Length: 311
Image 1: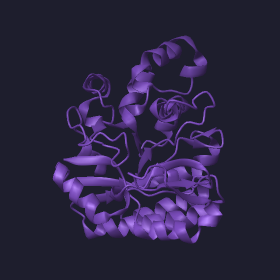
Image 2: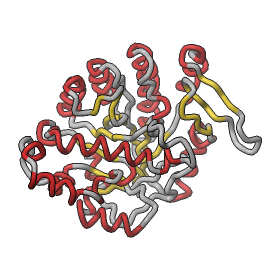
Image 3: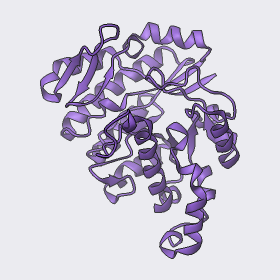
Image 4: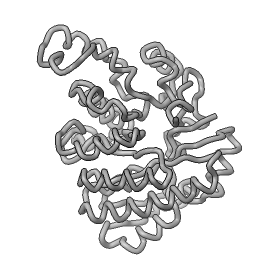
């Protein structure tokens, strides 16, 4: 069984964070004596540094115990560092990507990896991606945009051009939503995360980028957010408004099958619906392990696209 949505922090990355803790405002917070310390970067998105995030032997043992034969390991979104200088972001990306590539090479049958890139400087991001894929990684994990710019913004073109040339996997994985209305009851995570995916995916679909960069394999986290379940509304807009249809070569529903989706939905009925809309071959098993809301073990039903995505 494959798992396309897992996260890990190599030892060299933790060392880099410690060495640069003042620069990135890293804080280790003890919120609960029964849990590990929480790591916060720049006063944002604190998360528990569970042993499974940082202990390679434990990660591999848990993977084997649950029956995952091959895991695709991604950097964690809290360490994208997009709100710092591009040079600093690229420095950590280089450390992170080298460490993941080295780990994956030590276990090629059991591990593949995705890179992190300097999305705050698309030219550097293209370089990060090129170097990472030359080292054996399969693509990159990126956020849904930056500084109010969606991924279709022309400024990101150098990165998408490189990703298209490399036939890279681009795993779009949001950070917590910062909408000021979502400040309580864990809503930044519960609905904010899939909402951010929805915005990014809808923007990519309506912008024509899926036609322009048709060699990129775009994987959407958490079942594609809300997009697959509101696609009828986009189809109706396509029929009614030239502003929607002018740049598209086909109906929005048909573009759904140009994305890939993980199975992290925690609801078999929702997953079955997704499979009917996009096909089981466009869905890959995923868990989001070892975050709190992981679907562990990953759901395999209706998710048959794992091996083909890695080709």
